[in-house]
Image (cartoon, rainbow, N blue to C red):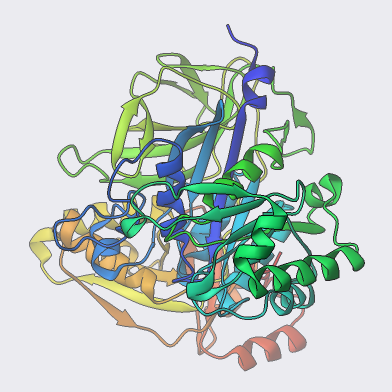
Amino acid sequence: MSDPRVEAARRRTFAIISHPDAGKTTLTEKFLLYGGMLTTGAGAVKAKGGRRSATSDWMELEQQRGISITSTVLQFPYRDRVLNLLDTPGHRDFSEDTYRVLAATDAAIMVLDGSKGIESQTRKLFEVCRDREIPIVTFINKWDRPSRDPLELLDEIEEQLILEPVPISWPVGEGDRFRGLIDRRSGDFVRYTRTVGGASEAPEELVDHARAATEEGDLWLDAQEGIELLDVSERVFDQKRFESGELSPVFFGSALTNFGVRMILDAMVDLVPSPSPRLDRDGNPRALEKPFSGIVFKVQANMDKAHRDRIAFLRVCSGQFDRGMVVTHEPTGKPFATKYAHSVSGQERETVEQAFPGDVIGLVNATSFRVGDAVFVDEPVQWPLVPSFAPSHFRVARTLDTSKAKQFRSGISQLDEEGVVQVLREPDFGDQAPILAAVGPLQFEVVQHRLENEFGAPVELVPCSWTTARITDQASALALRGMSGVTVAHRSDGELLALFESPYWLQRLEADQPELTLTKLIAEGEG
């Protein structure tokens, strides 16, 4: 048996968050390139002309749309460490999925477009990180294109996110004159050379200051002035403030050309904390050396269409995982044999024999596992509940082919368990016309695509007039069901949700009948 504490110290488990098109998927692929997991084709984030598609974007709909709408898990080695990268959806409609993924991480990289700075989705995802007290590393991307003033971007981060940005690297030039980066910690100037299509690591040249001043001219002087301003304003990195979420180390670069990729990977090893004891539902830490335990943070079906399987993604929280060990599924109390345990990179899988705190494993055919579930050996544990976001979009789902009713019900149940949407059922209609509740409308596109392509169940999704949902109870439900503009339905986790057509009617009810139970769900981007 290895010591879980020693193995955990070698792990770094983190996610990447960004606004769509900021370069998250490209950065993910470049990490794999520098980790030795890709040799050619890095940066081919869309399938075209016979080139490979992004490793993390495995779903057909993602490749058609060129966006990330599922979360995936990628593991790769770097500097004698094991890096676990949890790639999150890049679209705002899937921030609930992002929230669940962040429950399994120890840090996050926030990717910003150098020409745009803080965008709406960035702000929302950052608030999710803040709610979970996750340290943030900032990467200002696309510096090889026309960009805003770097000091202006730092001010924007500080003002809008209430987060102190501390540059670790500083750019020399920008746009097509982007020459390299100065490491503020060592003072080294690293000059880069472009490679064709960014398909290999960017050659790096260490240049002394005297030579840089001669060869780079005004670009070097501008960079030195920027660093002097940072020094005067005492923007100094502090590890404790970083881990507490008060401060963010900032790196500049270009994922597309590989400029600065190594620097930020080094930061993930040097700055990001290794896995630590996780708090259980009662607020007690589960020591790393305790017997094996883990938390399910994602369930995904049909990643392998040939086998129609279902994978529960599990973060190891304590102890050592050995393939074949029998674990206990806490919600049911039933044993589960882990013969089929995989490490998963996009759609590619490898059998995993061992795993340690911070690692992510995929358990195949874990049919009863749901997001937030605990598994353990010997010593039981329950983890804090993973909350659901407040839906603001609703559709009634109906099958267009009654002969496919069984496939329709099976598909709806599967997508519900994965958390693709929240599924609500009215007593009078049940599984025949379930209500789908979502944070954003793109979730409905995913539901329709998967029902028709994976389950062979053509559907229509009928728009509804509800705009707001509240958790209620049986006593209040009796009164609410007699009111116009209100529908009460069961969610699969047993909660009763009251759906309102008018937020003003809801406000009036809350004022006039305070005895009614109308509890807010977690709102998007709020704690």
